[in-house]
Image 1 (cartoon, rainbow, N blue to C red):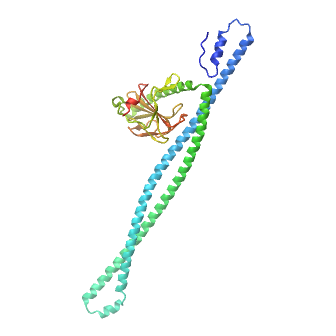
Image 2 (tube, rainbow, N blue to C red):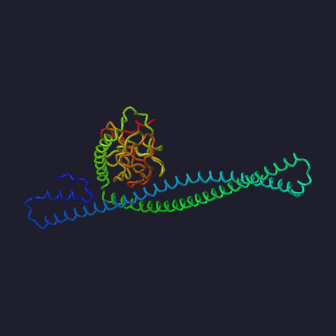
Image 3 (tube, rainbow, N blue to C red):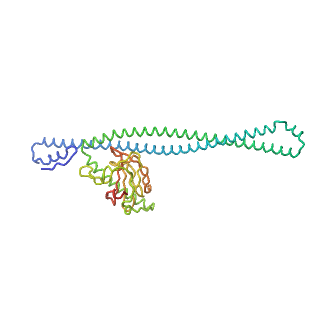
Length: 380
């Protein structure tokens, strides 16, 4: 008796029946019907797989759009923060200039009053009626100094007025730029929300297909194979890049128990816990809010920074000596392949890409290509 194996559409059962039937069966019509049913089921399975691939492609595009919008939002927020500080400084400088302007106007007012009092009686009459030469000389010197002080005060007031107008213009321009960035931020957030809603619809469709056809286990195994293939390519590229850049990558060996956590949060899935069927988690999933920074646990070189089926937006860092760390499910990545990263440097933002239902970070450590429990490597 043939042993029936799991199949999305029962093709294995039909094949078993076909080959366990006597080869000398007279009922050729029944045999032909079985062959036709097998062909039909195989075509249906092929069509379903193509539909699944199409949905995965749509999901990839949507999550890349989310990543772009999230990156734009982060950039706009940083620019707005900078402008806010600049505007605050300009407002302080403007207030200082206004106080200086008030003081200069008061001084000018006093100088004009003094000059008016000095010249209230006719200067010519004063000269003709004054017989003391020393007094005449003092009055002339005082009048000259008063005139110079007034001229200087007028020049300083004019310079302050000009500087104040310049500050007002700069302040107006920066406030206008700030408002433009706020408008852009509003649009980006609306775009992000739209992409996230579309993504949720795609994820529901994807989960429906996976559950309906019972191919989730096969999909997970395929994801594992794809990751292993990417690791092999990434390692080769990293070794070549390290040779060219002469980057000193000392591996993780002597840092066991001392590595910082990539994100803080509750461990949703621990290493080695059941995943699906006989599969177990090769890394750990840490719950954290969307948009939180994901940080490298150790210095190294980025060898992969792209969307990977089953893991969403993934960053892989080679630390040398056969040690690599992987950071998946991200909303967006902040580094590109070839970048050198330092310990605790932000490399991505937490998300729910790869079709995850809740946000968090997938974190994995591999030593010479073999997954290892990451928790003992992290500081307590």
